[in-house]
Every structure is written in structure tokens, then in C-alpha cells.
Image (cartoon, rainbow, N blue to C red):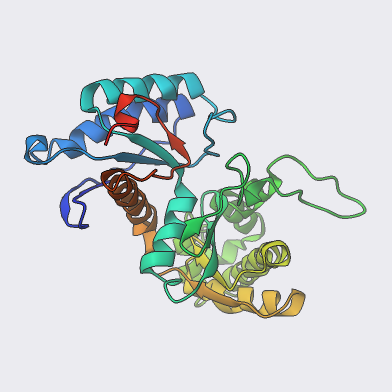
Length: 302
């Protein structure tokens, strides 16, 4: 988390590991995190112009697809009562895509798609500096693509999300790991490190690169981007890059494929940019754009 001025200067930061919990419990934690962050800075020194919360969810203006919607709205109501600042919600991968577009790997390109491959799978689409969210906020939800797709297999709901995620990657590694090589890798980073000297680990990593390449090629065929950025805890590993590039080159027309440059700071920096852009628009008497804006008097008064 980050507290910034309108010129981007950092006043306070907060980094905290969140437990694997339900959506409702995660929403309830937002209040304490905001309080802890603002507690590092004298809030009376300057007005709070906007608060952006990045979530791993489909974000629409009505939050109609949001699990735990009522809990989240109650949290936003309490935050509004305490701080009186506009409250914006955005998808976390969209935030990362926006940051890479303006500050990272895509800053010299006009149309980029950011693929996050990690615990979960997602994609952010940025065209000429603006996020493409789709009709109800679901653009880029590649975890919902039908998979597997063949004459003998029926697609199952969110199978791409499950199959491409780091947990399933490690399960596949454990299933074929030879006893002669000791315990199977317990993390994706360990798997990649062991690929330097383990043929089994190398085979698993190469297959994952091919799977990511297949997914990327499907997205290229629909969107025709200028650039693909690989991000996320797994996707940003440089060892995957050549394999992904090879598959994309074979399956579709030429497109640049690169690793993200902002690593685990991408989402936070994208959220900061959204907050600053929104606040500046309101100060200039213009309409600030957001995926979701909590509608109170504070969201309309400059």
C-alpha cells in the first residue's frame, strides 16, 4: 500500500502479507489496512483526495458479480464516514497493466496486454493509456476461458485459472518428481531454481512456458495487441520468456513478448496512478474515470 501526493511523492508505505481467507474477511481487513497506512502520516497536513482499492475480482459499476458484495459495500460506507474521500475500486491486474503501460515495459507502446500468471491468472488491456474493461468489467478474465477444449474433453468452469495457477503447477511437478532428486519443489521459485540442474524441473518449466504461450496466442487472435507483458509471481520469471515467444510465433502473427519491469510493485503503482488521475480530473472540474466509484457527496463535490 502507498500514500502519495498529487505529484507522486511518497509519504507512507505499508507492506503486509494477507492470509488466505474468504472474500468477506478480506474486505473487512481493508479498513484496518487503510487506517494503518494513514496512521503513518499526518492526515491534517493535506486533504485526502481519493482512495483506490485493487481487488482480484471483476469490478463493475454495480458490483453485480461480486462475491460478498454486501460486506464490501458496508466497509466502503464506513470508510466514507471516517475519511470522506472518493472511494474507487479496480481490478488488481488492470492496475498492474496500467503501471506497466506508463512506467514499465509498455511505456513505448500504444496497445499492450498484461498477462498475470501466478497464484491466479488474469489479463489487463491498455489502449492509448486507457484501460479496456469491457461491458461489465470482465474484459481480460482469461481464467474463464473454456478449457480444456478437444473432441474428448469437456471444458469446466475456471479450469484455466486452476490449471495455470502456481498450486496446480507444483502438484503436477510433485506427481512426476523422481525420489532420486529429493523432495519435490515447495514453491514456484524453487522449481525454477532447480531447473538449472534438474532435467525433470526443466521439463516442467518448459511445458508451463508452452501452456502460457498457448493462452497468449488465443488472446492475440482476439485482441491483436502490439505487446504482451508477462507478469505475476510465475509469469515474470525470465526462464519462461523464450518458450512463450516460440509458441506465440508459431500460432499467430508477430507480436512482441516481454517480461514486466515492475514486479510486485505493479499493482500498487497502477492504483496510485488511478488515484492521482481521478483527483486531478476533479480538481480541474472534469469527470474522473473509475471501474467503481462509491457514490456519496464526496464523490461528486470538487
